Amino acid sequence: EKGGYPHFMIKEIHEQPTAVKTTVTPRIEDGLPDLSECGITPEALKNVNNIFIVACGTAMHAGMVGKYVIEKLARVSVTVDIASEFRYRDPLLGKDDLVVIISQSGETADSKAVLSLAKEMGAKTLAVVNVKGSSIAREADMVIYTHAGPEIAVASTKAYMVQLAVMYLLAFEMAFAGGRIDEEKCRKLTSQLTAMPDIIQETIEKTLDVCQYISTKLITADSLLYIGRGLDYALSMEGSLKLKEISYIHSESYAAGELKHGTISLITDGMPVIAVATQNTLLEKTVSNIKEVKARGAMTIVICDEQADIDREAADYLIRVPRISEMLMPMVATVPMQLLAYYTSVNKGNDVDKPRNLAKSVTVE
Ligand code: M6R
Image (cartoon, rainbow, N blue to C red):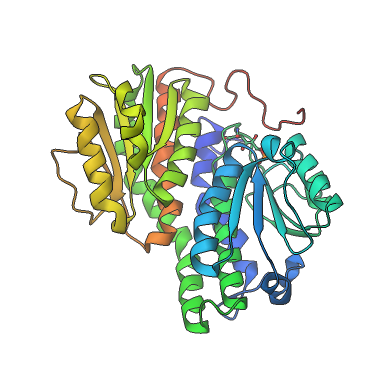
C-alpha cells in the first residue's frame, strides 16, 4: 500500500504533482479561475470586508502564505489566526467578513469550533478541506475541496501543497472579481499555476539527493533555526514544524530581520541555520542576515533559486530549486524542506509516519 516506498511520507511527497493537478484543473475554465462548483461566485467575493483565515498547525501555515498572496493581489485585509486562540479572543466579526477555515481532516476540534462561532456571529464561512463529507466541510457555507487523496503520514506534505494551490486560486479570483488585476494578468497567473505540477516534479528530482546528504549534517543538532523574509518567512514556519515533529530536533522559525532583536544570541558554533531565500526583492537583505549568523559560527544551509547570486562565503550548503515567479516560489521551496525533515527523521531511526505523541487528526481541544 506504500507503492514501493519505505514510508507514506515519501510516497505522499512524490504524489504532490498529481495532487496539485487534480485540485487545480477542475477549477479552471477557459484559462481563468472558476470556483463556482464550490459555491463561490465573483459577486460573493467582491463584497468581502475582511478575511480571517483560521486553522491549526500546517493548515495555518498555508494560511500565512494565503495572506501574503491575497493581500498583494486582491488588496483585501487578511488576518491569520490559530484556531485555539481565535475562538477565545472575542473576535470582531460581521456579516461582510469571510472566515476561511483550512483543515486537511475537516475534523480538528478547535477549527470546527471556530466555524460554529463564525456562523453564530453571522460571518460568511468558507472551508478548505481534504476529507470529503467531514464535519467542517458539511457545516461551512462554501467548500473548496483539496483533492490530495488520503494523507496517511502524520506529517502533512501533499495536503499543505494543495492548500497552497487553493490559496492562489482564491487570490486570483478575488483580485479579478474586485478589479485589482485585469483579465490578461489573471490568465497569466492562472497559467503559471497550471504549470506547477511539472515544476514540483522537477524540484523533487533535483533536490532529493542533496537533501538526503545535508540531513546527515543535521542529525547531531540539538536545536536549529529556520529564517526567511516575506513569503520565505511564512514558508519557514512550515519547514520548521515539519522538521521538529518528525526529527525531534528543536527548531524555531524566525523572521530574518528580527534576529538581531534577541534570537541571534542563541547561535553557537556549528548550530544549523536554514535560510529560505527565494524572494529576489529581499535577497540582499536575507543574505546579509545569513552572513551575520555565519560570522557567529552557524552552519548555514541556503534554499534559493538556481539563478540566485549567493556569496559562497555565506552558505555552507546550497539547495537550488527551479526559478519561477516570486509569488509561486513557496510551492517549489517547500519540497526541499519536506525532504530535509524526512531524511533527518529516517537517519535518526525515528518512526517517520507516526511520530511520538502526535495523532493525524486532533479531535480534542
Ligand atoms: O486536519 P487539519 O488540517 O485540521 O490538522 C491541523 C494540524 O493538526 C496538522 O496540520 C498538524 O500540524 C500536522 N501534523 C502537521 O504536519
